Image 1 (tube, rainbow, N blue to C red):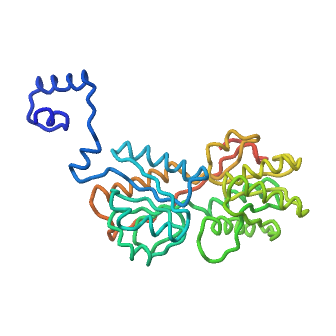
Image 2 (cartoon, rainbow, N blue to C red):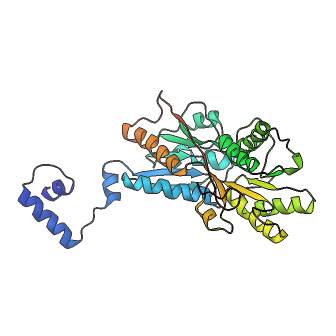
Image 3 (cartoon, helix red, strand yellow):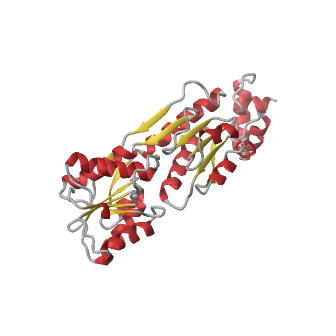
Length: 326
């Protein structure tokens, strides 16, 4: 009992006894079994991160940020991939799946408020992404429209007039990453009084490097001229840069390119990628702050639901004609 009191910082031991216990701990290399301790107090210490996929840099980088923040508070992150399917998301939020978690960070793509209500989630949840679930949970979003407007306005301000939208979508009225960033592309053109040639809006399957490469090649083989490209993700922008090099077009002299996400890899490309930074670090901090506030208060859902939109900025590098670093 004396050793337990010392290790757990409880009173009841003299300074001499405390010093002797800590010295023995150091000499023996004793480490507390955190799992056993959490089981004893009825806590897992686990945060569930439920995301559509992990085959691109965005979610893997987010997971690393969240795990670092969680560990600094005595928690750890377990990642589950939903596959961006309705079935996968419903399975991920089922009571038996979420019960072991202290709280859940969830990026829904397919399900709606009725699905979540029917699931009866009893742990705190913070939502990511664009899919609002009617005030049930705290929600952290990036400024997709505003960030895309910044990217396209940057291209327009530096002389581009025929800007390809890599991964573009028609505005169906349903908010998704692609439709919101496409909306920003169009609003930037409207604000500048520059018409959009719809042939420059090129769909992409999943916004990967391969998709970006193929989108630029389709424009090239279709004989559709362009002097700028806004890719909906940095991964797609990387593919666009490779395609432009293969075609023999210079970046930024012939075609200026801007991505979105500020992935770390973009700074090491040739040329270095100009991108939209959605403030990923602040987003991760806000997510963890909101989630652990509820975890530690023991409230899954309350009346004071928070909806936070993070600010975006342009990081200017070598793939556009403005060379001043931001």
